[in-house]
Image (tube, rainbow, N blue to C red; front, side, top):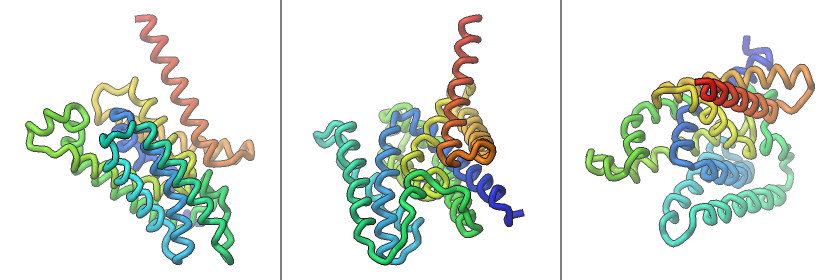
Length: 265
């Protein structure tokens, strides 16, 4: 079954959708959309380090994405406006990453594949990395689900319950770095934030509980991956952007249905 490249691509897309869904819900609730973008952009620098030191792309991207996320977490609330801080770090990391890649002599790099993904070239090893990373993220979020929810709703309530919101933020940061690393092959660093935000935002109007929202977001993400790949195959379009386009269409359609039902109520 895994000999077929389309089957491997669909499994990779569904794996990323499952990892991104619960994390994307917290990104939406905490209004961390640009935070995800900044972490993803930093991954290009990690790819350059990984290629320079002959490390795994997953290890390099995870390490730098984690450093970026921790830096943003540390500097936030220390006199810098969050949007300014994220703008400086995100674009600086992307620029340094692209410059570092240009210094790599003797290494052939398909930069477009890292920027926009190359899901059709996913190998069996990539599938192990993607599903292993997705399992780690889902397990981490399930383990801290209640604590993360409480910290997201109200920090004072979290402290009163014996929780440490900063520790929960750190757990979320680690999960985000892992998700960015596993999603690079599927949609690339420039579209990862879309797979985090769009399915979760589309699920928001359909769900009555946080758990339901995460589940619906996973289904929407999986449908986007499968339908996007089919669309790319039929219309000969780029696979990663096609997946994001399907997610955007689902978001628009579900919102239109919601508004119509709301107007008719």
